[in-house]
Image (cartoon, rainbow, N blue to C red):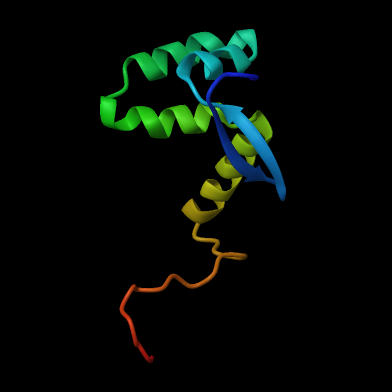
Length: 93
């Protein structure tokens, strides 16, 4: 990825550089996933492209972890998730 745009994030506690362009994301995917990426990104509403690109740009292990967490939440299991703040300052309950 030298000289190309990158996105930097943390995965599993380590800093990881991810592709910063759609071409870079596509090139980083295994050959058998590229057609699915092309279909999804090509038919996406423009407002959804950044989210879709970010998901596909993650390594498979990170996507699998995200999918497992989403499945856990869908089943109503909030184990390991903290209480959300309602955003009101000085809220004493």
